[in-house]
Image (tube, rainbow, N blue to C red):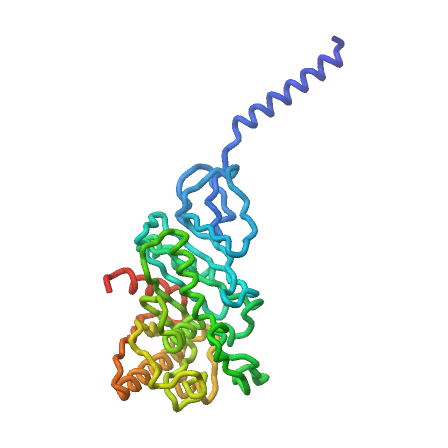
Length: 355
């Protein structure tokens, strides 16, 4: 072996030694299972619990890439995730369901369906419930009705109850629309359907679920109590709606019942509807868009005022008809138009004490 070959052999040996030492000193990285939170981007140097989402950390090398969602393929793993379902009788539409499954899920675990506001941000509304979901062992389901399949506010806030809408340039007043008398076009039936799918998938024993909706989601839920009272929901929390459909024959739909398919006398007030209002969602609140028109301004000049008006008018109508009235009004101290604050209060209200 000449001198050149000897030098080359020494260099190769040196490189191999460095590579061996590098592999021995390499630290295994850990991550949390995909949870749709910001901590999905974080890595940790040792195993344990993620300080953000509280999920068990796994080796990064064991992480399985997230699959593309397949419609009606439902998988619900521990922690946060999502799945895709069709629009029920409207098969051409799709709904993403963001969920949080608590660690100690049991067959008796309760279920809450959370409806987001006008942003349709079901993932963020789901996230607002995670801490309380673990505390109270509640399964959270938050539907995302995308603008692609449910365009404009009348497809969501008004649950698809109107079509062929004409609106002024300022987008403050509807100048024309048609009332859809076909319940198959509304989104109210989706909530029972989502619950039934999950109950069957997870073998849950509960026969009912709870509903919480904030802002636009709250609009959907008070209308659900009026127009689809025969549902499987146990308690319905309608929170901080911008405006209301008051159950009166004296006002035209959608601010009243006139022209819709039901009348005052056909109303059912026995459902567990709770007007869940933030004390600070008043004239000083600047968050969120608040619709203004002569029709809705009759209900009040801010959300707290309008929600209180809706409750009082509904109670008066039920009394005049001598109907049972089971609706409630709850005002949450020191919270404004804040879905996170109202979500925490809703979780405590529903599950913190036996109701």
